[in-house]
Length: 459
Image (cartoon, rainbow, N blue to C red; front, side):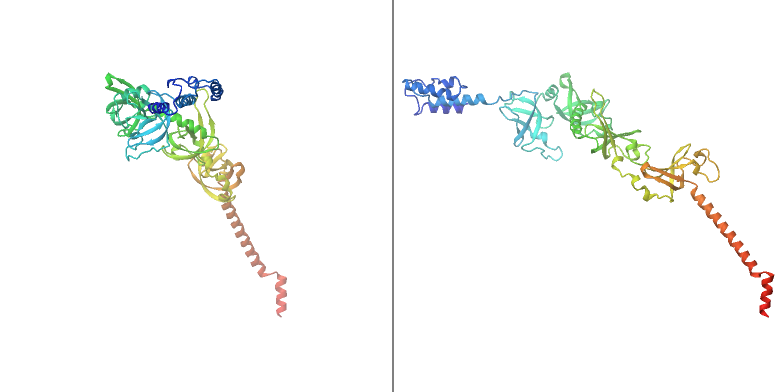
């Protein structure tokens, strides 16, 4: 405002100064009421001139009125205080700091060290990027609005840990070792303690955290700052919640999603889709018969699945997402007629026994039934267990096929029946040939009359 006042004085003392001798500080009606419309003042000025009144206002008064009107029409700028979470845009990058516009009268600054990769030193920030950070200094201490995203990266100032605890700021710490019940963490040159239950969302191998730089939240400071307790779990839960909100927006029945297997149970596999977990039931792991999910997937494996069902929790319950690998696999029943034609013989594995027959797996996802009446050729079978057991490899013949109903009729006696029929046919053929040979031999001697006639011809 100093430069502006000087320019006003220069205008007031120039050639345009009032000739009436009135002091320069005389107030113009527009300056007294800066919000009054400009058109309302023009007639009044004209009337005063015609009545021999003082001349029109000086340039200083005009400028002051315009400036006051401009200030009145500007939107009120936000005032920030320490602890406020603000969102802004990077407008410039300096050697060590970035300048951020946050809607306040002055731009805020944030240390570039917060955005450098600890390993490579590469800066992950550019002009135009949006960021969310916490105000740690509103300008009362340093003269500038200072922002922080993570305490422990960049420069340190006294009282940072207390400020982090008070405002819920994240701190960066190095896990230096394990101790009874938790971990030792070095934060801003201070040894802190993180309980084992607060290091992650799920239990894992504790050794994997040692040597890692992680983000924590300060939960307790006591003994004059000598005892500091930190937690990582709260931050992870917040990140997961934000990620889950984004994930739910893109989830819909029929959508194909990618995720990571997080755990295996007897009934299926849980998959992290990004803040939310879905379940692939053991029956949806594929067309093949699966006894345990570990036969198909492993923890940490990335999978692609189709969303089969969504149940969004309403009253604090648990949301459920049903997934399927089977839905994305090729249905083996579409080619069953070509692979297993009626009349063909194939080897299969007995998978299940029922009083009415045995189910035999011919290929993954393709099971056929051997009815109890087709298990033995000569004897009546009371129960399939009297002939076969689960796990047996047997040869069967396809005697019926209904792909639309997903049915394959099998027989264990067709081969034996064919062999018997072939043997019987062979025996009958041999008997016929033997009879024919004997008949031919008898016919070769002829009757007495034929013999006498033959003798008379010769004479």
